[in-house]
Image (cartoon, rainbow, N blue to C red; front, side, top):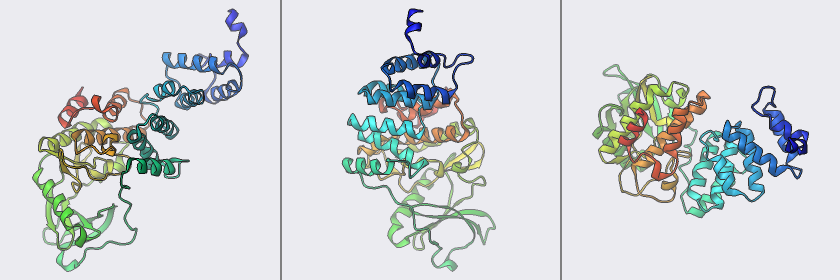
Length: 372
């Protein structure tokens, strides 16, 4: 009681956080801001850390405490607070990235700042740090978005398809919903931007996908390297990117099984992300875009912003764990889109994107982790 009497009204009120009638988040942030200007700052931090151990603090308050610890030179303590799977807002990720960079772990710092850039390309300081840290790593810039101008089938009479609408555009090419004139079926027609330059990649994409034909991999119908197009099965529900609010349990296990099949055949996909997961139905995901697939152990190609593991950024050769990282990032995206705090999926995402040694070693281990 003597200690209670020695505390200021603000510190006592802050200590009521989480109790009936206790301060709401806005009030708690205001109280903590006041206490940071007083000698009681250390006690306020300790009090909030103790409260967090009993019941997780709201993330904005957690970030405020971590920032205070950083200002006091207690980087390790701040990093420990932010390592929580729930600390995944852009401010939390940026602060974690700064701490990792200070500690010399630039690959992990870049991986986090890329997640921020995916959400908000103009988030304060994100682009500058991304450029500076990638330069320090000696990593090539990721592929830029394609020119927004039209990309059309060259020599259209040679292609037996009627274009219906554009459905996706990426660094390699454009995907159209199209109709096979002879068979009357819908197809996804991928047209490479530069057929003359990218002929080898187009053939590679088609051959790898065809060699993996079966559950969870998009079917290849036809390919024309000379004119730069690839015809694939049409997925009626489109890409998972547009349906991240769907229940994760509907697609997680079959997608993990598809990744496992890729790994069992000796390949690493290298671009596991929501845009490259198509939905034949709500429970039938299909991996697509095998243009950057490589045999395990081969040099890793550049990857998509926000879905490249820290180890790959550091120069590791192709490894199944890099696809597991991409899978974990998809789960994180889905949790964000649905505003879910489901502890099971949060834990799985944290495991897949966490320390390499704790990550499932390949798709088969990922399947086991999903089914637990």
